[in-house]
Length: 231
Image (cartoon, rainbow, N blue to C red; front, top):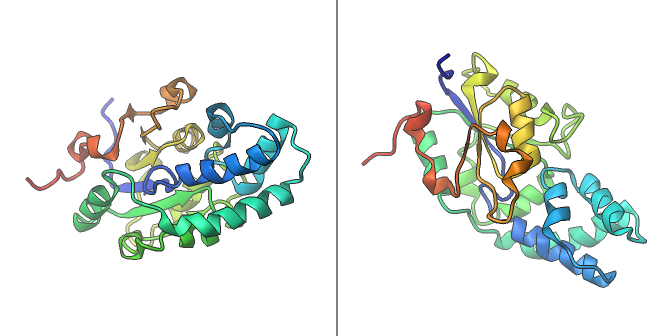
């Protein structure tokens, strides 16, 4: 059976379009160090794709920290305000986003984060992010009842394309960097391109990804029936 035609694209944000995962790690590492623990990739991979409060509970349970989720959120919020405005784009992100927009492919963002943090992160990239038709924030949106790996955020994002609606979820290509996000997109019935961090255990979601690439620079639009880059 031939693959469905790709007509729409949904991107995750953190670690996929913006190099924010290093900032998350920096801030959470500071919190862990304060309580005598060392932040590691095992717990980080468990947190990726979750809301702030969920991530806080995961960390508290993992290290048995003597703090509340509110304490976690308050501490990390201060660090995010300090560091997020310096967020840089991931390799290949600007090239791909501008290419799809210029070719008339409807594009959107579905992120587990909040609108407040998003606005900090795009401080130096507002023009580029204005090219997306819409953004769905799982942490804030009342229609997103369950965060990734549940499919809610992608289902909500899919139905909000303003003009040209996708015929089917199989016509929507998802880009993700986190295992929870890959599972979420796959569960929503969308093919997923996974761009994991080099430290990530790809066995966490390998079977749910259509392809796995090292960088957005490695993505070939024509492989999914999208307009190729201009030579």
